[in-house]
Image (cartoon, rainbow over all chains, first blue to last red; front, side, top):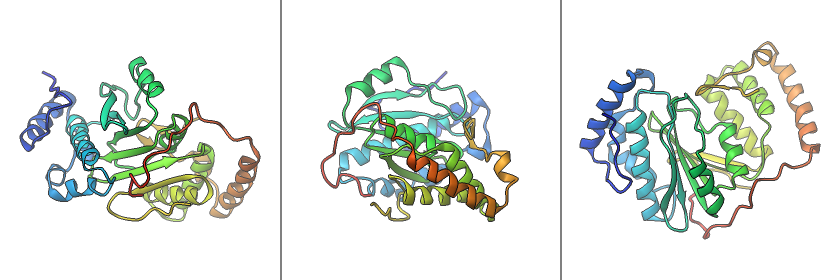
Length: 215
Length: 56
């Protein structure tokens, strides 16, 4: 039976354990993308969300959504996504039924919510724990989202925003350069994103780790 | 073509075959071209937020 919790339900440690086991049984557990349960339940992980915004209410909501997504998708390569209206701190859309790895398709309901809402934050999961993709940045820009969060299965949280399209081919070339210099895949992507920050109007940072230099 | 396959970023083979010097040159050439192209406009205008909401 699929475990579905209402958006108003608090995600407690008991629910984390319960949901984890159900999802693992549904999809077959891929250890490489299993969440770090101990860390996700820790106060250290919770405190990370206090670094995101000046609104306690918003930070609390984002923490609950992050846990919800991580429990739901632990051990799988499927992503979940929520849209939050920043004027009300309420969830206005969600996509949690994706059955294609690494892809989220917008339903008509989601497209309508995006069109009707002026100030949106998106929060979505990355099972592979990589930083925001260039597609994430470009979607942030084209949809005029005010902020994006990436919730990684390993506990990393990234925040990002874009005011300019970035050519994906160009980004690939920059990643390749750093990879050839000896960086691993994730490091090469992060280094390439840092370079994109210098050349385009995009910003990102790992929450709790570094400061973003905003032009 | 997207460099992302499923949930992984895949570095295109053609770039892996190039040296770092070639990649540096090609990057600069492509950046020059990109900067001259007309700016792609978003589907809607971004509305400003209350100042300092995000600790960026």
